[in-house]
Length: 337
Image 1 (spheres, rainbow, N blue to C red):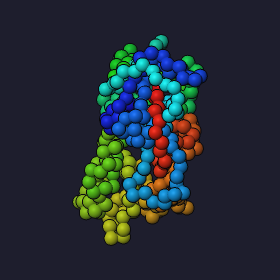
Image 2 (tube, rainbow, N blue to C red):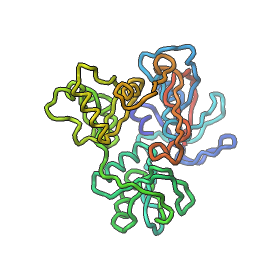
Image 3 (cartoon, rainbow, N blue to C red):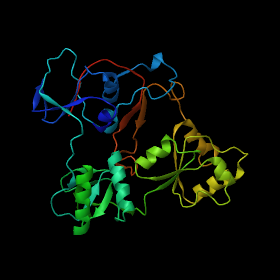
Image 4 (cartoon, helix red, strand yellow):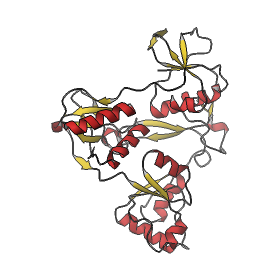
């Protein structure tokens, strides 16, 4: 909802419960009418579209479309163009505030599922503020019968922490779930929010995105990594990279990266270069980056979560997520509960 408004898309809100076929949309559900000037952008953001990958091999500026509804799990319903649908609505200018806070009742601990940008930002803010946090290393079940994935953040259940989490949850729209200590799996303490060294020469969109999520992220070029008198990677936890491994003309940069990984430093890589970086740097063997449709710049791209709820990294996410695509669009209006 926030994204739609920030991009100039008009959004209405249902004034009362509205029936359409067998579906009931609750009062307050959002409606995006496809009769507005930016209907194409709205449709791109909300619908899944049609795969036209076979008609376009390379896209100049990917992705051509990004379905925010499918990416973040919003419930999007498409109303056909010729359907009888004329509910009473109000124009809105700001998103409704989601209910949040701690789950009612006495709790041994509280758990937060890390499944959205807001959850990541909130976790980083709590860690930076000195709140003790642990991560669950396996999935577990809450007293309410909900299965929370590995990677969920676990907090103490004492009164002071409860007050802090309740206030934080109400501000952010996040719900902290009650957890019984006897039902928890093995836990790993979080020392601090990861500090990320981004292998780039300036503040680019990678650095901006990481900072927007609450991480400490600084650009460090491979030239700087090679020429700096002191190792720039000291005090960083993770290297983020989208480029090729430093050439043989930068031997100090290579040596410092090798030492960083040997000392337990983490790595995040994007694209074919991000994967091939590890092979060239002798960190892995047998890894070949697979591309499709013009170096992965067009077509439907899926990310398969093979770890499931047992993965501390991706346990909170669906088994398959659509990442980007080139899609043919049509005009329609889409209520968004």
